Amino acid sequence: GDADALIAYAKNYLGVPYVWGGTTPRGFDCSGFTQYVFRAIGISLPRVSRDQQDVGTSISPYNVQKGDLVFRGNPAHHVGIYIGGGKYIHAPQTGDVVKIAAYNPSRFTTAARVLH
Image (cartoon, rainbow, N blue to C red; front, side, top):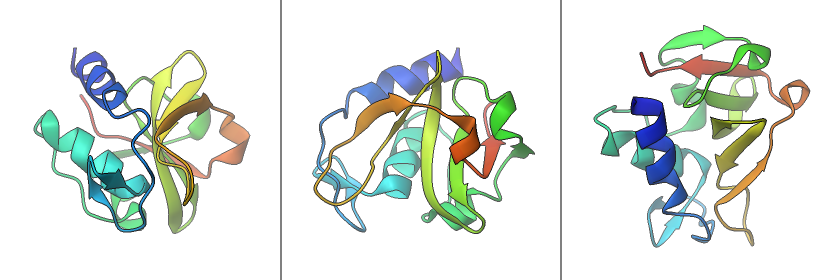
């Protein structure tokens, strides 16, 4: 339910440019994107990835389910949303756009489950 709605909504923003500090569909940074998408289904996340890392239930990057937040670094410097099927959606970096990428759990430090 919630995870599918979240992922469908997130996919609306594929191709939006990465903008450092961006929090709107004119341009997102990684945590601005996750905050914006989760807000649409009624979940309030903090603004930056290191604070988003402390929300919900901490889980192993190897045990993710659709809709979980996935983080690089501790404290986190990057966040995305696992969408199932070994893929995640994120706003990668300056010069790039919101995109779906292959999810390799060994490249992630932590994950958080914020959907129930």
